Length: 252
Image 1: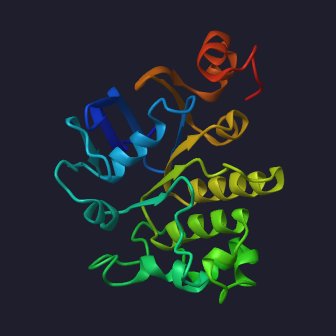
Image 2 (image 1 turned 30 degrees about the horizontal axis):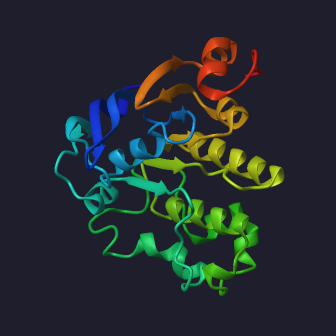
């Protein structure tokens, strides 16, 4: 694996006095997809929020592209090249599909940062995103609130890609989707990684995570209890049963 684009170093994150992340360390190399698995309430979303600057850790540090993110506000982290597909989609329901997609391209969102990638990666613009999600092309002038749940998830993913980020944070992108749409999300994650973007994925869908990830962590009570290749997790029956509620080995 290549040099880390993102390094999370022994972070401890709280909500008030609630101690959520209790010494989490991980690396996401450039162009890799790292998945975080675990039951509800174990700290997965808090990890995403800590990386994005929305829930800064009290101890430890997040390093992105060699620079500590300690003390940086979320907008500065986003401008540095981090985009998020949040849990629950969080689209702007009163804005049209087109307006939602164009938000990351504004000068306010990306001052001084070129949309074209200097390393020659795929450049995501409106045409590229609509080609990826033709359902959105048919609804460009519809308000986001009028879309189905699956279409809103596509819009959330497309909006993140429009920022042409170095790192995409995806928090439960398959949540609530029909199997056909889960397959589409799997395909777009593969293409995002193949085009050179790194992905930190939080998922409940074990099969999806094992299918797309280069490396997998399992979190329980704010700590990692497993880290390894997907095939290693697929064979780790004790971890699967105790922390993911899966009986026996699974395919990877």
